[in-house]
Picture 1 (spheres, rainbow, N blue to C red):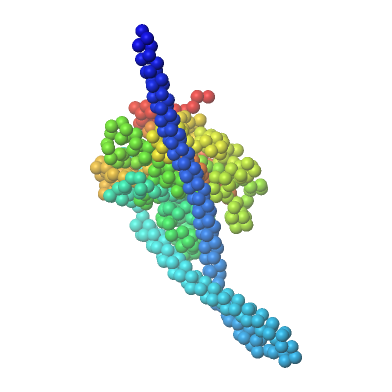
Picture 2: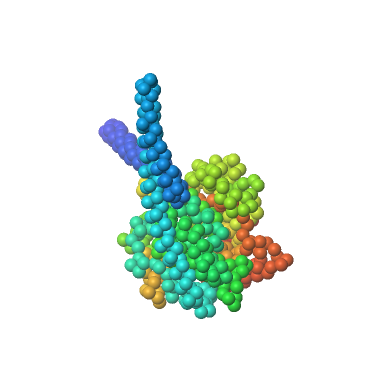
Length: 553
C-alpha cells in the first residue's frame, strides 16, 4: 500500500507538469497566432492608408494636368508676341543709367535682370505650352475623325430591323454573342480587371471629366445621337467636339456612337434606347468584370483598386474552399458568379442648380465638392450634405444595401481561422431584398476566365445576362436586370470602403416625360411591362431554389 502511494506521488506531479508544459506550449502557439493576426491587420491598415494617400495625390496631379491642358489650349500667338515685346523693352531699359547714383543704378539693373529672367521663363513656358497645345489638337483631330467615320458608317450601313435581346432570347444571345472577350481567357486572380460601362446623351458629356480623373481602368462610353442632329454634314464636327475634347484627356475611354431614329421615324426622348445602348457597351468589354453606371454617378477615387482587391479575395476564398472540400487541387478555373453592390450616395445642394453651367461650377469652384474617399463621404454625410442615393424620393431603390450600417464600417463577415491567417476578408452578404424595387449599381463577372465550348460564335460566352431591350426611356430598365440576377440565384454582397456619388444636374427631358402621366404613356407602359416581366422570370426560373428571398416585414 505504501509503495502504491509513493508511486502515485511520483506520477501525479509529472502528469500535471506535463499538462502545464502542454498548456504553456498551446498558449505560446495561440499568442504567436494572435500576434501574426495583429501584425497582418496592422500591415493591411497601414497599406490602406498609404494607398489612400497615393490615390489622393494621383487625383490632385490628374486634375492639375487637365487644368494645365485647358490653359495650354488658350495660349496663342498674341500672348507670345506680347511676351517678346516685354523682353525687348526690358533689354532697352537696362541701358538707362544714372551717373550720380551708382548704387541706385546697380539695384535697378539687378531688378531688371530678375524681371527679364522671369519673363524669359514665362516666354519659354508658353512656348512649350504651344507645343503641347499642338500635340493636343493633333490627337483631338484624330479622335474627331474616327467619330465622324462611325457616323458615316452607321448612316451608310444602318442595321436592318435588328431584333431585340430579351429574356426569351437570352440563351441564343449569349451563345451567339459577338462580344470582345479574349478567346484565350484569363489567368486568375492576377488578370482580374473591371470596365466601367456608361451610356449618356450629349448634354451629360461634361460629367465624364471628373470620372476620368478618378477611374484609371477601361471605360466604354455609348453616346446617344438623334438622327436629325447629324443630317447636316457641316455641323457634325461641332456636335462631336465636346466628346473629342473629353476623350483626348481620357485615353482609357472607348467611345461608341449610337444613332437613333431615321428620316421616316424621328427620334424623341421618350424612346431613349437605354438598354440597347448598355448592351452595345457590354459587347465592347474585354475585361473579366463590368460595372454598369449612369453618367451622373461619379466613382470614389479608390473604387477601381478596392473592387479588384475584394474580387481577388473572393477568388482566393473560393479556391481555398474548393481545395479543402477535396475538389480540384489547382483551384477554381472560373470566376465566381457574384453581384458586388457598390453603395450609392448623392451630393445635396440648396437650391439645386437649374442649368448645366451652374451645375458645372460646383467642381470648378470647389474640387472637394464630391467626396473622394470614405472619410470624406462620412464627413459629408455627418454634415447632411450627402445622403443615400434618392432616399428622400425613392427609399426602396437602395435601402437593401444598408448604407447607414456601411457608413459605420460594418463591411465584413467572419471567416474561419485559416482564411483569417491569410488576411482574406469576406464581404457582407445580402440575405434578403427589402423591396422588389431594389436597383443597386453592381460589379458583375463578364468575360470568362476559361472560354466555354458551348459558345456558337467566335467569341466566348459571357458569364451574366444582357439587359432586356424591351425596356426604354426612363424607369424599370435597371431594376429588371437586378431582378433577373436574383431569380437566376446570383448571390449579392456589398463592397467595403468605396462608393459612387451622384453629381447634381438639370432634370432630363426623358424624366420629365416619365413624370407627366397625363400627357405621356411611358410611365404606365414600363410599369405594365415590368409586372409582365416579373411573371416571366418566375416561370423561366421556377426550378431555382437558392434565389435571395424578399425580407419578412
